[in-house]
Amino acid sequence: MQYLSFKIENQAAFVTIQRPPANALASDLIIELDELMDELEKNEEARVILLHGEGRFFSAGADIKEFTKVESGEDFSKLSKRGQDLFERMENFPKPIIAAIHGAALGGGLELAMGCHIRLVGENAKLGLPELQLGLVPGFAGSQRLAKFVGSAKAAEMLLTSEPISGKEAVQWGLANRAYPDDEVLQHAKEMAFSIAKKSPVAMKAALELLSFSKHERFYEGVRREAELFGDVFVSEDGQEGIKAFIEKRTPEFKGR
Image (cartoon, rainbow, N blue to C red; front, side):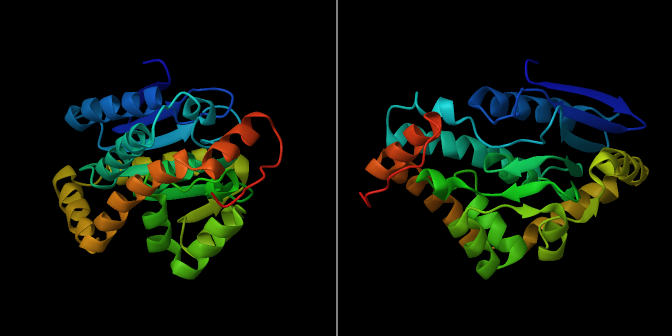
């Protein structure tokens, strides 16, 4: 694997994202993570999965430079659906997945974290969906999962302001389970993973299946519409301007077209 590594200890699989400098979610990383899920699903030694990022961040977002290589709104929608399908698979995975978040989980990075069953965060970590700042919208089901976790009013605030919240705030808002000092997150996540791994795999699989029934059809309708709008907004003048401004490190000038 190019961007991921994993090891198994005490029946817990520790998966590390290794795509410096920001662990951005490029298409290759998404494909690789999906393939790793295939392997871990079959591996009887792995009863729980702990996902974390190497370096300064959990994942600071999607790979914006990759966006410049996408030629059409339809292709952009396909990119969106690829991430949506993976994170849906993770949320319905038969083994618990814990995200240990330090530094930042932004954009696609937060959408990845929201696809996990449990999120443990550093108190000063930054969590947010800043896509509107680029003239875009979330594309990996973030618009639907965020509202499910924090409610529509707080989701609207996070989306429309593009301002991240801290790890402490994420716990208060219901987006994360627990917050710890930044340098202690991974250790606490390991302790939780070891504890969960002692449970019956049969019972854990059943419990995770039961949790999936809390999602209703409107969620899936929203996810499908998100992929469509992800492509529509991408080909708009504002979408192209936002991406260009990000690459050029300047403030975008949106025209409403």
